[in-house]
Image 1 (cartoon, each protein chain N blue to C red):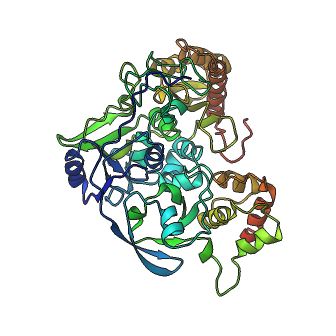
Image 2 (cartoon, chains in turn orange, blue):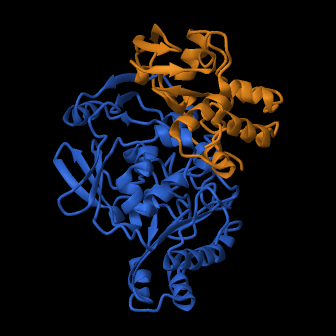
Image 3 (spheres, rainbow over the protein chains, first blue to last red):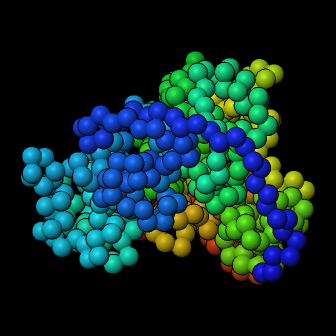
Length: 171
Length: 338
């Protein structure tokens, strides 16, 4: 399709907004950030706090690689503005292990070989932690449905489901 | 993403005041559609007014026997709220058929209503789109239009409203409560979203500087005989090609009342009261369902790639009404269609 009659898009110049102070508790640690309003929570974690475990996949809420827990609920951090999460508690993949012991989901992903390239894995594991906390999935079918916001282009889905089932334990 | 100013609203009146102070300001709540569109340079607000902390997060019974849903109730919380799950299972099911668990945790009730009616040309700033750039032309009419509308289209736009929740709200006769500079008012759900006509840039009849504060459901939830049946290209996390919210009130085998709304077929959730009327007094049977389906689709018009939706919609309507009549609603985790 030839873009014949599209007007050139002229972006209005606006005064540059000043940075805004944001207080977060990230993986149990209180942090204070100064960010411009358009900083996503994902970029705040990766670029301001050097927590690069959370991955940027599509950056449009379609792949789930950026999934983190905010106040215990799984969300796409690429579609959240850091300034809107002022005061929130954020858990990333770096915060799941306790005292050097892997989180049961991390161990289960290893046990079941639930990844290949590993890029989607932090999002998969944080999403699974959210799923278990929600308590709505009992069967493999329900796990598949409620994990559908996390894509794995290596196709490790059967092993991911098996790993989550192991971490859930017998219901 | 475009640079923008950010400020928080302290209460509803403050939100209305703040939005009125800047013609290019937008409200943000869950942000799942707005942030995405801003990243694509489709939406370019100069200022975001954060309404996510306003006290609009309650789900409560109303004196008339209905339920009032605060505009900030997250989609996931609404679907799993005991009042909704028990009394309005068609709404709960529709919500769970949409988006992903993460997005349902973020997206708000009001935001679900206000997500843009859209198609991929709306997102592609390199192509003409009357909704994005009024008067520039519609790329979809002569382009790839497999996902597009078959009902209520205009020369200017054939995009669809992608919400599942709104299809159920349309079928349930919901009302939308809004506040604005002129005070509060209530909009019938059927009058909330618009057909494209000559102004496809307007998705709703919300007036400038109005804010959605709640969605109200009437007492009748059709809990015994309802379904939400969604057909899409993959089994989960995809927009509907065609979806149907169907609900019946039965007296023995006779239909006393019927509700029928479609998603994925029009610029807004498509409810057809005249088609529902053809069902009243009829036996709850396949011939009656097929007649109603034909009636709903009497003016359907396909384009180069989406004409299949007309036959598909006919079958999904019949199947959904059958599920409703049998009291066997579609499961949103087992994808087997019975």
